[in-house]
Image 1 (tube, rainbow over the protein chains, first blue to last red):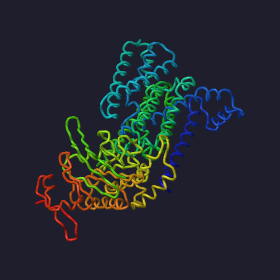
Image 2 (cartoon, one colour):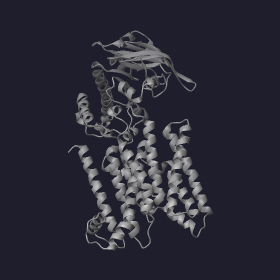
Image 3 (tube, helix red, strand yellow):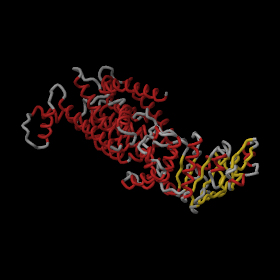
Image 4 (tube, one colour):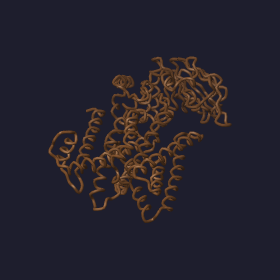
Length: 337
Length: 254
């Protein structure tokens, strides 16, 4: 079997695994439903009469479905965003918050919580702050007379630092009994507050960014070569890098806007995808998205069922991510020696 | 296709590295560039494809200024092959060659079946079938250079620009790479390459250009170096160029 075909089959298998994970996740929780029941609920929701009661319909369609759609979209998005940044910055250790948009979105959310705004407005402000950070980074970095990639990273560090300071200040002045715990809990990352309203805010920009990045996957391959090589192949590296950064940043800001900081997914999933499938973004982008979606949905299942109190998802992804990162470092050392 | 370089000067800030340099490269020519470190060889090779910006019309391709061309148009005229570099995300040999067709694709377009078939032709042309399924990380330095040359052929570019293509290669691979390039030049391609090995320049080029401190001090057939002290002056030690029994030439440091 040629390698291209086997890679496509692996992507397909990952896609099927991701769909199965979604069906299982819809059934997991205090009110357990078997996968067969889940399929019946979904068919009934599509208009077929499957004889399901109101309770399972309500639990699946109104409580779990928006949460699982969110975990799938954000898992896929963070993985895709992480892989895009890794390829355009030619650095496998880069994560989606490399340009500081996560810090900016966190600041937006913290400020909104301090002002006592609704959860929907918290998400909107977080998203808008992420976009403001992106604009600052773009405007400032284009005026710095340096190599484009380096100036982006340096300006990103500055922006990240500024917004992190802003978040610390918001925490300092917030009420330690009510607001401070809410900010802290939000920033730990959780999908518990996600409903269809929050999803409607981010779903369209996320899907548009997914489509653009998948369509650009071949050209993003070329950005991982040296700048001279990519340009000698006739590729407008500045334009493609700009589009890719805008899309990956919007994905990151969207994620923080509705679920807070979810670390590590955007760093480790691209590595798993490249190990399992290929370095070629035409295949590793979809496989990263499937692995990210499946992984975040699995972690979310654990976060809401492991104990009586829901564990913030950001804590669990760090528990998985940190040892995996060490594994990668050891693997790298063995490879070099 | 004619590459014309006319009165080209170039500075990095205050430091002038190329001074009023003129030369041409035409179809079927294999031009070697010799000179010490810092002579301006790499700067020249990066100016030709427009990676560095020279004066508007000092570099012309078929009479058109290179800097006036789009990146795609430039890529259809010339292919740049860097020194051996390790990619952070190494691709398969096949995918690496396929990248050469990117200058014919629109922004959101991917390579199609016709491009895949062309990859097969190029693989056969350069005799790379044995390594086609392997990863770039797992092949030798010489094979990697041949893959980059194959990628250049996918571009359908007629001018190959090679920056020290034989660095880091063992002697056998140095010869292998230059012989393959020579085969292509015999088919009508043209090539300009830099090297630190005068013996290779003498044996594998139709013309040799010798640079010193940003100035061309010699531009002629390699045989014209016989009996001259150009290389001795450039490398600042006595070098004798002698003919071998089979008609070749070698440098002998004295």
